[in-house]
Length: 254
Image 1: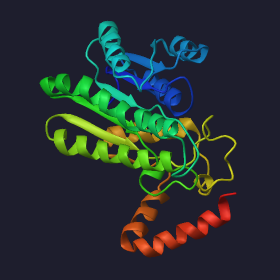
Image 2: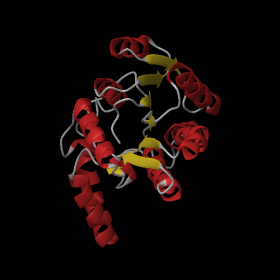
Image 3: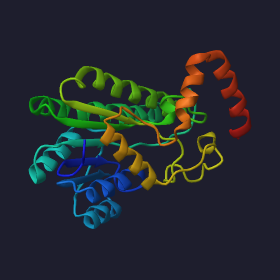
Image 4: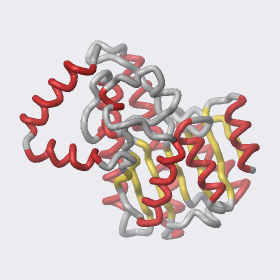
């Protein structure tokens, strides 16, 4: 799918990957770009600079997602592309607080569910639409420092797979972005973590990978191609892969 002439919505768009993707959609000639995030000056700045619409939104609240879609459609018409990108990082393992687990689940999984609930009926009726969900390489491999993050990102990948299986032959395209380290506020300060072992990408480069994947209508978007090799190692011999991950953890987790 080409973005030119399309109505695009991006969540988590006040900075990082979301901002870069919103800017790229505008540059590609989108009919309208709606940027959504928590209230703040950055959100308004991004919208103003790209000539888009800013909508303050808590993606963990289904009513906010419905309102976001309604405002986008009121301004520009039916939503063609919805990039469900917002995310958080909460450290910890099984003993992480219930709130950290609940917040991670709400933002990394249920936000995608809410978007699909709001958009799938209309897209099915039009036999056209594109749902893109940001997960993480951690959703394909593992997260060293956060069980809430890794577990919910795995669930995000699974939900995107489900959407593709259910609707991919009915006009709805689905992609899942699974980056490793990207130079964003979420990642800064953790540069020595395992996630950065294969290099730290710029958000603009991730946006470029997204555009190429959309053009090819490819499900899995890997900003770091080496992740595909890691996936093959994992599925080829799980016990060996787990042993290697324990060794990597010992080297990188302080």
